[in-house]
Amino acid sequence: MAVAQLNQEVVSAAANRLQSESGIRPSNRQVLNVVGGSMTTVAKFMNVWRNESPAVSVNAAALPSGLLRELEALQRNAEKAVRDACMAELSNARESEQALIQENEQLQADLASLQVSMNGAQEDATRAQIQLSQVQADNAGLKSMLENERSCISVLQVDLAKATLRFEEAMPRLLQELCECREELALARKAQVAAEIAAAVAAERVNGAEQRLRNH
Image 1 (tube, rainbow, N blue to C red):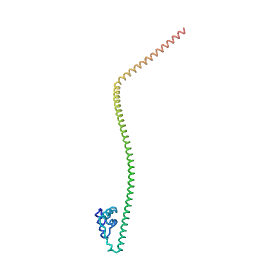
Image 2 (tube, rainbow, N blue to C red; image 1 turned 135 degrees about the horizontal axis):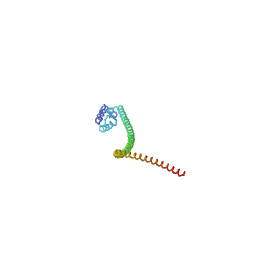
Image 3 (cartoon, helix red, strand yellow; image 1 turned 180 degrees about the horizontal axis):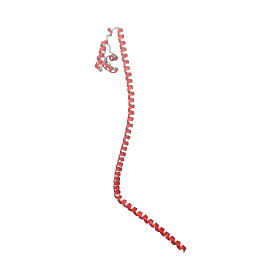
């Protein structure tokens, strides 16, 4: 019957029972069939049991020669089965070891690839941080320029309001001056017309005088 947790006491008890039933030392495989588990674990505890347990003494004289030969054949077969089982366990262990080595190599390659990717990501993050800092600096500069522009606009708005107020205050005076200028211009035009008429009359008189002189 398989035991959930193998230990030296369980394996030794199974080996002693099998030995008492058969009269010969049991093989690792026979004990494994009783207690379960793995051949490696059972073999480890069986080595301790063989070193501590006395060999089974068989009175050869009391047994027939045919039975002795059969017992020896059984012993050889048991030992061969044990060797085969150990070789199979060793082969499985080597295959497992090779698989673990390959898996470890693959994991190492994956780790190296991940490390390269992580380094690239860190470099990208560093560049992005630098760009972000530059953008933040540019943004701060733009904000400062915007504040300056707003200040200038505020000053210009104040100046425009003052100029508008001065213009509105000066508008009546300017209109008065415009009216006066128009009146002066009208007078000047009248004077020019009168002067032109007087000049024309004077020219006629001169022409008449010249004509009379030529006739005399």
